[in-house]
Image (cartoon, rainbow, N blue to C red; front, side, top):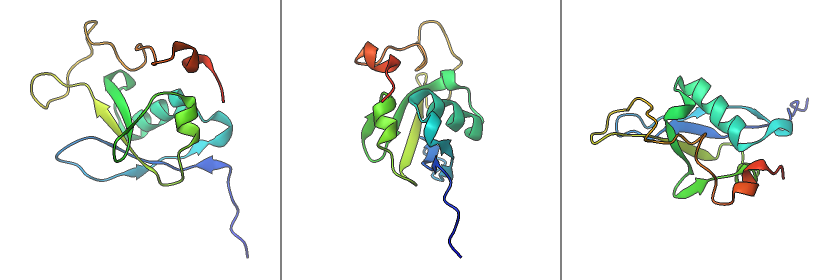
Length: 116
């Protein structure tokens, strides 16, 4: 019997941390696949505030910046959330001096409004 194929993409995400190396799988509906959706779902699953995320990195070394980058993700692709830090390696509270990823403009500001 064939397995039912759901219309979802399953990247594996984690928080960048020297203490924690494990990934979790998240499911993203292909119809709603976007940068903001990846950010929101990942943060919800990891129990963090999206405003604490500075960058999203596709491992080993590629920054994800827009919807088109998210569409290229493969199932079980490893994605890492890089959190804002203060002088130490501890998590900081959000301040108006440190813009969150939700507030930072993309390299191409028009790309943040596009759906590919």
